[in-house]
Amino acid sequence: MADSILGDSASLWPAQEQRARSPKNTTMIQKILIANRGEIALRIVRACRELGIKTLAVYSEADVQSLHVQLADEAICIGGPRSADSYLRADRIIAAAEIADVDAIHPGYGFLSENAKFAQQCETCGIKFIGPKSESIRMMGDKAIAKDTVRKAGVPIVPGSDGPIDTEGEAVKIARKIGYPVIIKAVAGGGGRGMRIAHNDVSFAKEYHVARNEAEKAFGNGQVYIEKYIERPRHIEFQILADAHGHTVHLGERDCSVQRRHQKLIEESPSPFLTPSLRKTMGKAAIKAAVAAGYENAGTIEFLVDAKGNFYFIEMNTRIQVEHPVTEEVTGIDLIKQQIRIANGEKLGFDQGDITFTKHAIECRINAEDPARNFTPSPGTIGLYYAPGGHGVRVDSHVYSGYTIPSHYDSMIGKLICFGSTRKIALERSYRALSEYLIRGVKTTIPLQKAIMSDPTFIEGKATTAYMDDFMSRTPPDLFL
Ligand code: ADP
Image 1 (cartoon, rainbow, N blue to C red):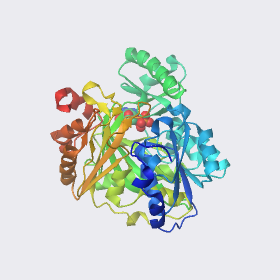
Image 2: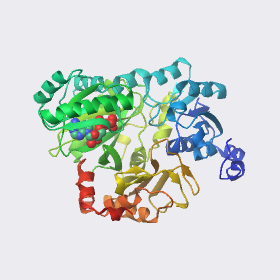
Image 3: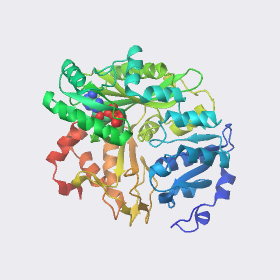
Image 4: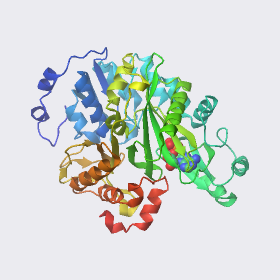
């Protein structure tokens, strides 16, 4: 186990004692490699501990101090700080899996989680990939094929080009046919990158080239496609679970409309916008989309919903999502354990009718960023760290006092999930918990989240994806200090 500024980790968390107290493992999977870092790696370690499954952490040289490395049963360093030298090195991860003799790999989110080739390599090596089959990842990872697949299954999609467009001339023709405004999106896109909006032929010509260049740089694939730009929609997604025995259910929705630069900042369930009948219709559509992809394991069907309640499929995420705890708190179902059980070949232990939604939950993403400076990342060493607690408060985070946030990765350092029997309670609790949350030494999104929790538009449940731009333009930046 790696050195830690926590001192002798063995004395802080006696591994043998932990193991002695672990429940009896009833799955065939005895040991899991966690091909990720940060809070999600820790989340997976925790689920495995409760299932009595051993864990192997893989980590980069920048993550020696990371909590998941300290808490896993074993840890192997797989390379340098850059993701390309460690968390994206499929060859090293598979080598670590073979050396440590693991049965399965959990990819978390980001990194290799939606890499069909990696999933296939795992399959070839006889290691279970905790996620869907590589064919489903390939199918849903190509946004054009994904849209075509779900459209054929009868799920509404955003009007747009049939697939990638290679010339500007062809692209302008399609944009005119769809009707402005349009959004130009990277075929290989993700994380809100590689998207540009055009309002007329002139802006289209410019944005088309910017989008292609951005996509080439970010994803090594400059192909783009075009969609109708839906104005002021809500982003509402459905959580899916599907076992290997043909049984697919949904676990309700998450409203992720509060986004900055097309990246989610706050997520909640249930959506304050959906009526029971629209929820039912969208839930059925989400299941249809997953079945059309031959889907197995946990996945998310993302929709945009316009003011009239028309909904359109935009993509499927073939992995666990950052915001999965919102669904866990509302349904009481542990999604990581479900993923492991499904990978183990077990049947889902419930039907659609057994899933109940008894709470309201709100998640705030705590990012080391400066909201007053256009969300510039703020890496550095955390001085004091104090996480809130109490009734209805959950914090998923890998950081602690004295932890240095590496500059090489995503700026998210934690998630605060507050829940209660009503939306009002969840809102009040979020504000209270954010007020208690202390992270000294780096800028964070906490003051911004607090301001949002007391903003009338958000409180009234009226936030669309246009909300953040509007909120930032009418809020003095000193509120975020
Ligand atoms: P990514 O895979 O990069 O996350 P998505 O397709 O999931 O991209 O879209 C991310 C966000 O971008 C959506 O939640 C929404 O805010 C915005 N967006 C995407 N497509 C459209 C569209 N056709 N019209 C309006 N907004 C869109």
